[in-house]
Image 1 (cartoon, one colour):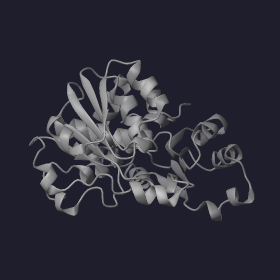
Image 2: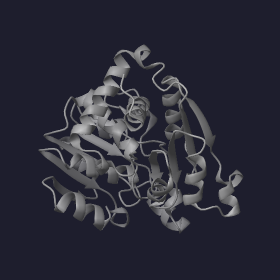
Image 3: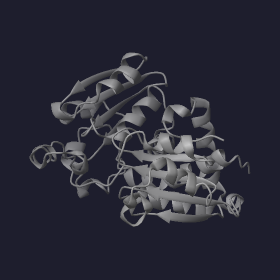
Image 4: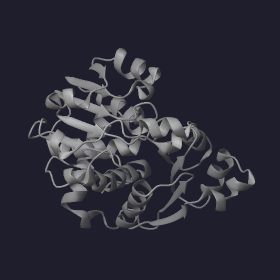
Length: 305
């Protein structure tokens, strides 16, 4: 039995295999319509979610399976003090695979250690979000056609942005990758991510506070929101929340084939006047998440079509 807790749990060959499966699902969805017949996915979301939870559920339904859900921790046994370990043991009795989001870093790892079915980390605090990275990689593959020899700008909340951490870990394993880390000083990339993924690897990187100066060199711009729920101080959030706002005027400086990604939800860091630009790939990115989660469910359940 295998779980997915961190994006590094998957080799680059396995990432390529998942992407190829997702592309095949896109090309021939009917072939996969009964692949998970009589299988059940449990979605355990201790934090609010729209895209991740619904895309997991849509993925399982489109594979012919069923979904049982816990979408509010206040109405679960967690509100009575049940541990993550016990919850994982119990839910394993009812489902064939679990997708879990939790506000505490490491919660998904604890669940996987105690569950008797595969566990998928759907986001654990500010740590990582591997299935969002799968959606990101499929988007880059479909939009740009490669993972090598490109400059990727990561903009906004790089400190708490678990999607950023996972994407850096994944892409730093490919050749010719250069990262531009764009953030205010207070939201810089954590040292452990910088040391583990960048300083010890082959990827080039540099840090800056200016989005406008770096836009012309980027092949991918990955925007993130400043996450109110990660701040202990409301004043700090208010001061930093509008640090970067991408507008149509600013986008004029970017390459014609650059792509703008965003894990969503956005607040105001991407103006709505950008949505109609062909470089705006974030809604296509959200759709890609469903296909990659379908491929991942199949892989973890050991189902071959």
